[in-house]
Image (cartoon, rainbow, N blue to C red; front, side):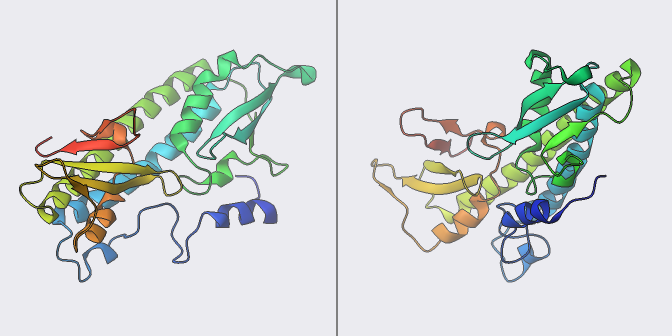
Length: 250
């Protein structure tokens, strides 16, 4: 692991909250269960499993990036994408300083997107080069065998994390519905870009009336913060208003 200098450390701390945590999720075990009887045991159990699966996947993805980097690449520079949610390949350089076509690096961009936001979703020190820039440097010759093994391990880690995050989100959804009037059949959620999670946007009553008022809505939003991967939920995106619809029983 390369040394992380002051500027990189400062970037990392930008994403740390006042409580010392990284990321969006507001409550972590054991805090999840303290004086909050309405938090379901299923969510208390599911969250640390998803968190551990996320950490494991990140390590395997970083190893996959290193092992599957095209053989002709000597070093690669990364840059944050437009909304700052993940890194992308900015340029790749081969022997004698030759700039390489970025086409063969599409799978690297995909893995970087899955890693997420540096210093928040994973250990960003592992994507900082020796000159303290986001990047990758070759430390060993490319191996076809290691390439294949790293891809296999990465796929297995992705599947493990998907199962874990799906269970976490299922537990959060199941805990939200008891907070809502039984007559309500649908909920709308908005995606919080900064926090990278869902927030309750509207409660759809049988008569079509919508609102987000009520004593339980703050609780519902705490639970919605565990909905960080809408792709792995039964919510459907409305392309017109950008809201995610969740129907009871889905």
